[in-house]
Length: 168
Ligand SMILES: [Zn+2]
Image (cartoon, rainbow, N blue to C red; front, side, top):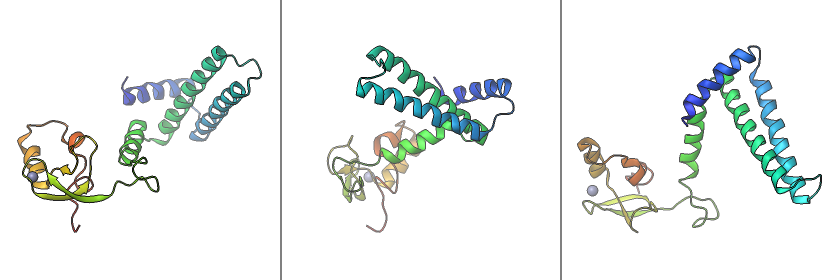
């Protein structure tokens, strides 16, 4: 499912059904559903109020679905691209490695070797590349221009972060 399309569809639905709704109302909906999610989780943990695995699962899924829909509609009222928010956050958090660096999650900058030409490049080790290896900015630019390899950033990460950090 494409998240941009989903956001558009929900916007159409929202404007048709609730033309007078506000971002504040959608935000309250988010909090209400978060409360319902907590309620199901807590009562299930406590083993009270008839929260069988079946009831817990049904209410949990319902709350999560509603929560995200309210959140998307909040974005609709604020003209924020929902998908962009997720991808921005994902890009940021996935650069961190809390197993290796429990204090701040930051992967340390080190001198790496370009896996194509052997030149030094300062950067942060990517888990998908052999230890000590990265790419230099020249080779990266060359690959970019040549268009040989697609999804370069998926392999080598970001210039100025994973490789080609200046002044190190
Ligand atoms: Zn190189």
